[in-house]
Image 1 (tube, rainbow, N blue to C red):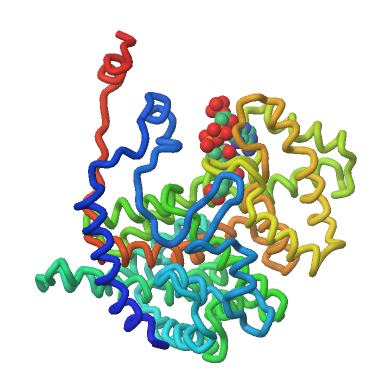
Image 2: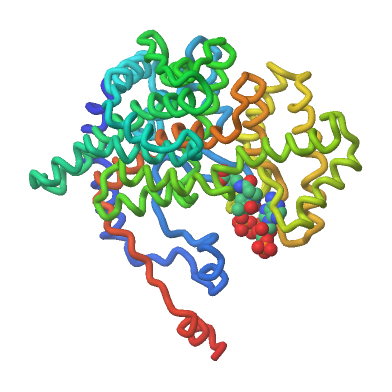
Length: 435
Ligand code: CMX
């Protein structure tokens, strides 16, 4: 099959059978215990969700359908032999669990281009906001406007049988993924450039087209964009953006409503917004010392200054990871190959030497190592995308490639309304024997 939908049509019954059997034969198996710490601690470590596309191992980091980032770099088709994995290839892999051929990826790229048309009112909805509105506010608004065309909502109104929910969810998810670069590029050009739309180029793949519509055409920038989108696509299901999408869609809100909610979570500084915060923090260091060439002592002083003023060191730490994020490592490798002498890249490398021992000394930080956001900003800055307030929008476009497939599977597998039990503080005190 070069057609993704036909591939899914074959896979859905097989997965439905697996889940049915799991429930029937093993539904009462215990998976762990819940402690009061977990209830008070943001549900850390509580196994509570199924997410098909990817899983995060605390030490090793992300695997997309069992494949590490280097595995993906080796096995997934790129724009040219040996190139970075194409986002379309990641999308195919996340949805089907299979490594696509170049032919399948090209066919999906063509399909996404054919779905990319953006209705005029979506631009108008964004235009209703002041140019000074944060790019993520504009992005979320644009996605909400796209919701008007939801196929799922129309099908639900027509009375679609629940066994078929996944089909219009597939349509919505692919349309959403296809349209996001255009919406996102419009916001960039509206805020930072001349406001003119650069049309989609029918000869370019998804990542390259997004860069092109932003106004970047240098082949190395296109290649970085492909890598950026691929590695930011998915990070299992419990992170704020992915989990939000899954939760909202569990009430049968359509993929647009669910994804707009996910973007609003991604826009928080402890999650996706950290990439903007990292570059701002790095720039402030350069401003303070007048140069990126600073000593270890100066850097150490600056880190303590950040911590002593009650702030976090952006780009460090993680809810699940306990080691350097492989998404950091692959961006570092890309930088070593393409921009080894960039002064900000060298500063990022130095920060990686100095921050972890300081965070470890605090005694409370569970993971002192860098995450994905510690690195992306200096690469984007090097390629001319210098406006850090925009960075989380790039992250958001990429995240649709992880969230879309899961929403399709949620509906295909009949995942129910999500509704965990909450307790009052008094009840919790009683349960643990504190009162
Ligand atoms: N700098 C300073 N303190 C940090 C820290 C950091 N980078 N990371 C964790 N801590 C602190 C926490 O704030 C917490 O302090 P309090 O007990 O005083 O509240 C303590 O260490 C324990 O936190 P933790 O269990 O190690 O971390 P959490 O799972 O609660 O939080 C995260 C994870 C990412 C929110 C946190 O590490 C953080 O704030 N990092 C900086 C922001 C960041 O880079 N976010 C991006 C994450 C990746 C992404 O989602 O994009």
